[in-house]
Length: 262
Image (cartoon, rainbow, N blue to C red; front, side, top):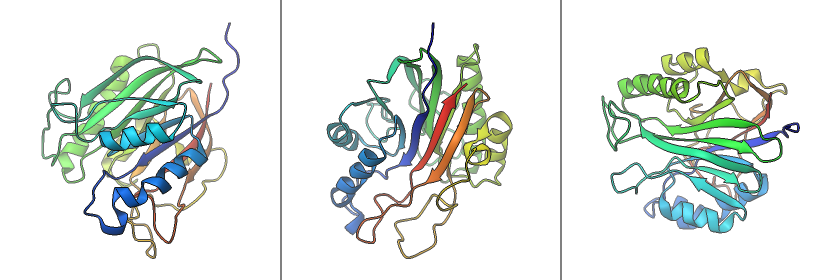
């Protein structure tokens, strides 16, 4: 017998890879504000992008109660991760995997016109209180390759369909490097729901999610998304444009949703 599922607070966040050549936006100068933001909003699940191993180590050490799944995109398991952080007290990971957005997804690789290897990390979670299961896919599409993005969204949906024959609830998060009117986002929106559009409450915060660290400029583009399957209700959607000392913790804003498993 299962009990009712409590709402799930989820955040997708491109935290910008650790780089000490970014001046005032170097990782060493923004890591405290970024981890503080994550601690304050205390999502049940975070889908991160551009996280290097040193950043993951720092965040896990500064976010008590969280664990993560995922691996780096390089052959040695290093490089950028697209990890999923989750509250251990709330969720059990039944399985997790990482695949590459390429013609050979089961091994480290890049294809088409991609500038870098790109990955998707996913996991099947069980909510400990209710016993309900759901899939979470978290990814980061290439920033240069038009064809790579086009093929990657097709591969993502093919993988989601392939691993989920029981049609359990599905969440897809990430930095897609695509605007809402692009063919790639339009394709995904035919398979899944854009959480902003179906949110029961009006969207909070700015429209755009990429800020390029430009505190005094209008954010540039909406490229970070949370997509949900038909068995998930979206209660709230917001883009969090918190800052410190007229600086942003990352060149992207976190996108937060409150979800209810049906």
